[in-house]
Image 1: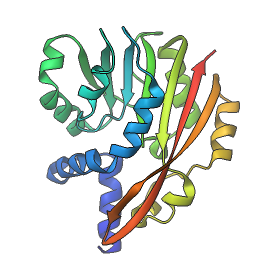
Image 2: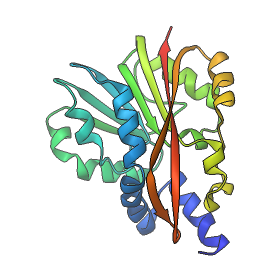
Image 3: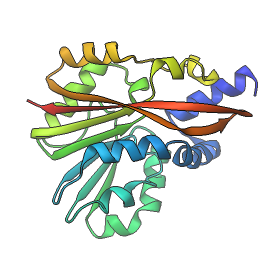
Length: 218
């Protein structure tokens, strides 16, 4: 892949669009399986939870979230119109049952009522937040008291070795995450560190890792 190819891929990963965006959505389902599994485990979904996911991609994992407990409802928020369309197509049955909804919006300005959700999940989106503190404040607004926020991401020491991440990705270390949450309205519960299975990318094997951040609304 050329540098221009990597730049285009980075743009698609940030905000999938067009025909290529459909394929990138499918690619993310495979590439995010390990980190998503770790995030869902940390999310600890309970009966009657009201979930909000930021950046659900094409909605492939919605079925897994809804199956974790009884009477769970779900909302997905994405700023890619294409991904919202794909979510509607993939989760038509859940929408008709009133168990899922999807909206096109920015993560720092969402069309939800205060305290609408018991839990928020987001996987591999923090790199793209234009204003991390404004985003956390918005998450805090829509969470119920004692609601939890789960953020899954890959650490700087891994991300900086991936060719496309030089194009528009913000890198995060544990230290930066602690600093962010210390200044936020959330209480940081923990930062889990997971080693992912070896995977292939651009003709080479890579050993990925992830952080799963768990925080609670004051």
